Length: 385
Image (cartoon, rainbow, N blue to C red):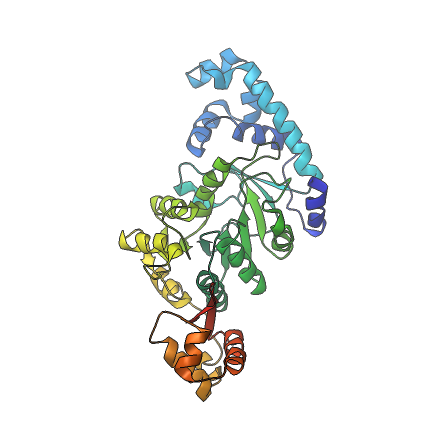
């Protein structure tokens, strides 16, 4: 399993790490139950180093720290340290970078988040402190409406915003659409995983994960390779998706789901949250509409709206894109005029209303879909893009 996935990482350049000994103590220290940045800072300020924490006796630690509990027991610390030694061998063998909270390259945005991890395991070289980081999340059951918006948002941001990174969770639906759009635009993207780097979930996204790491992006997790994978991990990793960014965009979401959890976490971190509105009858717009109605998220429909809301300077785009668009022919205009009077329509409805033969209309609709003028939805229904 490890070799079948990590063999893709052989061409990824590796950032220099600390010596294996220091890395082992840091991994072990970060693995202590309940460890946070604040607690880590307080302990290290008193004892001096991670190594001292693991080599000192229980009595010495209790005296210096002023408390005594299972965290300081010799057996507990020895078990944690042995697990860390195994992990050190794994990360060294597989060219994985260990990013500790005292490193310069550690995300500075994490300082604003009390429950952010103090260690990260990464594949790929990407600036975790880029000027502008956008997290994009949404349902795994994405519709053409959500995927189209996600793709267009990333494409437009890529052409107008400097030093940009797109963050998501490599899941089905909106997540993978955001990653692939970023790859297509040659901008870095970070995939935050809910498991160790010994595997990729879902397995269908392994090739995309390898492309992310190779093409200036990063695979990132706070889980060790030995950590078991369970559904709680996916909720916990949402805090990293929220903490890494300046703003978070929810493209689509049902009334309940991981995207809404991430949006609420981001709001709690004082991140700007945005959501794409949808029809009240659309199941996977219900969550976005609720975020907007409850003032957790601002309404967003384009990259320009997002950049304006964030007060980001934008790059000048050569030429006026509206001048580059081909004018609609009479048949295309008739379809657009018809669809603009309703939410959507089937091909049979348009045949009757426009008096076009079905073969002729079908060819026309395929051309219009390739041009990005319309979208196809389940049930053979069409809408204006």
